[in-house]
Image (cartoon, rainbow, N blue to C red; front, side, top):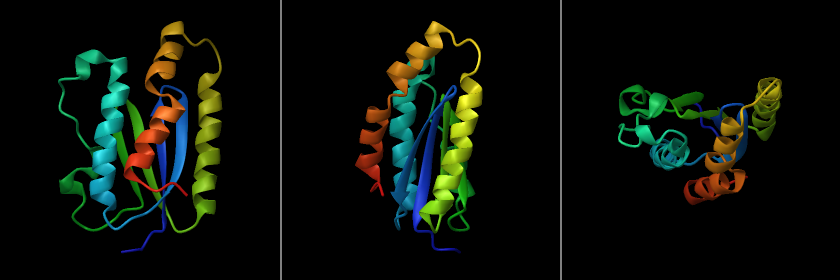
Length: 139
């Protein structure tokens, strides 16, 4: 099992992505599950009808985590959350560049007013940063 030093967290809603490099900690799986629940509840404001749907932890679910820490975890709900493990911040930055380019491609063309409002209301950088800081230590 590799000992990772950093985790890149990518939060996605539509074409919008926010990135946070955090210190990997010994309680990563539990911390990531708790973080995921809070972010999912925040982002579910886009689809209030999902509020009563049980939150699934995607790749962070207990049954997928029996063999140690993996290099990547995906959680798909309203938008996605990716956790990418790394030993250097350079690896994290390479992933940020890739996903940033994907966001630029996704922004091309018409974006409905509703999508833009949803991003503004349910994927606001400073709110996500508050949630990240509550659970992880940002590099």
